[in-house]
Length: 99
Image 1 (tube, one colour):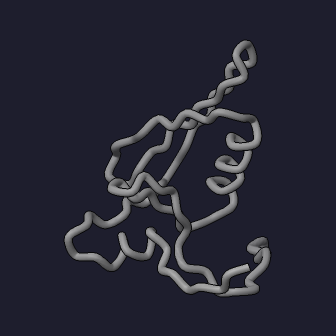
Image 2: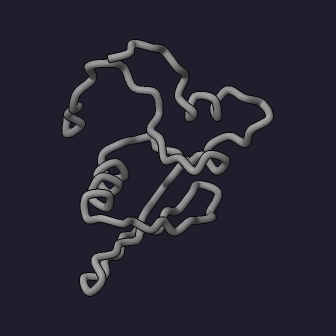
């Protein structure tokens, strides 16, 4: 196992002045075609635009839905085509927001 430190592409997008800043994701809608086992997720951005993402497997669909459902803030990097979370502290775990 190689132990190397690299910056994530998402971090580059946040810090590089020549790149557009990521757009916050504020909503989503999911679609699943049971006939051909194919899913799509429509993502709504804070700037009132949106993008349709195709998913190839049920696992990919559920991973994206889980990310969109449970993380906040969450962003889309238009130049690298990444969906990414905000920076989170290590070991944060689930936070109870019911109180």
